[in-house]
Amino acid sequence: MAIIRVDALRKIYAQANTSAKVMAIDNLTFDIEEHEITSIVGQTGCGKSTFLNILMGLEKPTSGRLIVDGVAPYEDFNSLRGKMGIVFQQDRLLPWRRAIDNAKIGLEVLAYPPEEQIKRATEWLSKLGLANFLNAYPSELSGGMRQRVALARALCIDPKIILLDEAFGHLDEVTARKLRKDFLELVYSTKKTAVFVTHQLDEAIEIGDRIIVFGKPAKVLAEIRVDPSIKEDQSKIQKMRQEIQQILDRN
Image 1 (cartoon, rainbow, N blue to C red):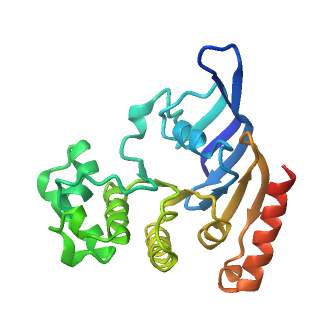
Image 2 (image 1 turned 180 degrees about the horizontal axis):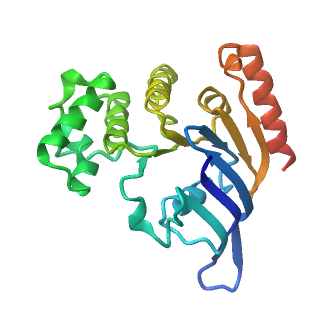
């Protein structure tokens, strides 16, 4: 069953002080099934971030429809409160708040009882390997640890959908690989739907059950199903990476 439906979506921006217009998204159409992890890849400036902004309800599409769990995000923003967790490229932690206080921000916004906030934040930070760092400030944590706090913040609210925008791209590969592994285990065990935007093809293959390749402006160039056996075979990963790169180069 599709939890996200994108139907003939378009987004056109008017350029300031001119009559010129820029097409960011052009007739984008695809579905994302419930409990599926979907990687979205494309060249810089292809409209990936614009698509996420529309998905989050921060921007209105020019035409077409985007439906999330039966709701158009921009038109009925409040209906999706607590249903989507978001992790950005930068952790966006508040420097004056401890890890546990940063992790429970979403629960505070959703007005959970204080005891429940502490309980959930503690549980998720512990699941992400930060049980001994609940009271640490962001300045006392490594980049990977700060991103784990950001993941805990997104998962604390128990969202149906988790969105990741280049969430591991700024980390060194050793740290990123471990965090991707832990993230996948948590998403599969809690049966979340995940949308993972990245420009790194290896990362898209490692994480996604399916890869959607965006052209420029954003339109679907290809949808590729990723067999789990591929993820442990570097030669198959390399072959798939080359196939995706060829698709992007032809656009």
